[in-house]
Image (tube, rainbow, N blue to C red; front, side, top):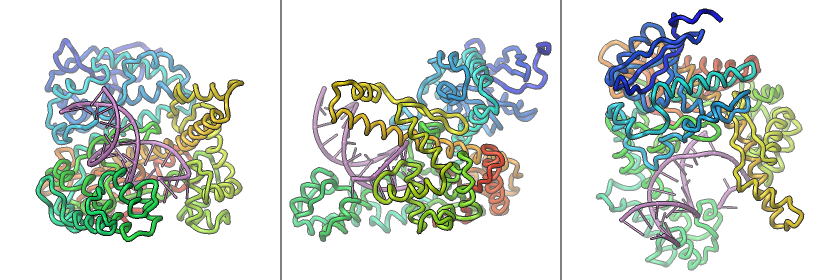
Length: 587
DNA sequence: AACAGTTGCGCG
DNA sequence: AAAGCGCGCAACTGTT
């Protein structure tokens, strides 16, 4: 053990609230674990403090909760390279089966809270979030401990847990990826998606008619509604209430058991086509109509709130604004600022490629090498058509048993035994109530007490057939969850690594000279290519025109780097579909 | 009037 | 009613 002195080269800087200083305080820690004395930071001096140290030499900022601190830094023009988000990392460490000793982390229950953003039924307007002082925000969202001593203690517990993981230490990689995701999520909200409100309005008007008075329904929607009622011969039929609509349909001779699109499409009746159109229009109006536009788009930016780690598998969720559900129909409203372009990329068949890599299935990797994975599976002779390949692969990952899926999955099992063994094993573990773990170490939650109760009751001597069948059914349900967990979760890890790499590369671009393009993206992101949108396996970068080609290259390089970071030399090719355009049109 | 639960549909 | 995973959101229903 080297002598403990004041840290010469700080590797971490832990930041928390300080009662004494009335604002924040920080402690720097070096590789040997030597700690600086507590450094007081005035309440309004955090951005300056972080900025000065970041310029001197980037270190990993350790704090309780990125969305509580980082928006304030960004609006002050300060970006950080790396962080360690104690709340998100705690969540992973407390359940990861790759960690040797979890006892201390698990005992710190004050850190085990769900994300504040995920809890709130309705997030406040995102722009407001960025106008508030850090002080006011911390009062509004007391989620995890915020004091410096608590942060230091938790960081110690987490580092001990990380050190207890086996080599190679994938957990350390996962925590870094999760934390950079926390930074990116805040940055995405800060920069915003460039949104053409006029184009959005055009799309709405074309489909629904001109914007109606508040509370009134648009003309085209009313007209289609009348068409449905006429065809039903029921001038008073309610179309917006599923039970009432079902009764009206039955009265008109349509023997449907629900009013879902899929079932309605099966029936022949003159009321069905206009009804399907009515539902489509009503959905567009309710989900992304003029009200949505007023609430979520300001100054040419749509600023959704992302929730990293918001899904059990590790995928991001969103809270407010429906960032992950923007309909393709509205894609043309996504439009680069003047003088700029959007560089969009999505990964072709991300999940099956991840499965091929993690299972080491060379045949499956070869099927996807340099081409559409489904085409490769057809060429391998396992199935006859691309559509069959798709159904088979989705069935393999989701646990399909019936129909085409049940027929095709066994063929995949013969052609790609290693890949199928991995998902089949994950399903078997889940059916027995066990826990599965992603490639980098995120573990699935165990089944709940009710699940265990049902299984226990069904295994008692006096259990009836109904009980046994119910127990078997929910066991299979849980098996499908764990089957999918390992693939969906590892794909989410790959995506984080991809974005983390890309973020680093993008910031190496020199700001564009001249009058700042993309001014609405804020002090940190204007004039420089930046991430603007993320959706599981897809990113959109907003870039000055001159940089677009280079950005496309960076996206591609980042995908290959992410593959190597997770899977080393595994011969899996993560293919991208790249587009450079003013509008983010899909297909 | 406020709340939880359900339905239906958008996204991957 | 998606045969098979994971979500968020709005509107409606039924309760308190």
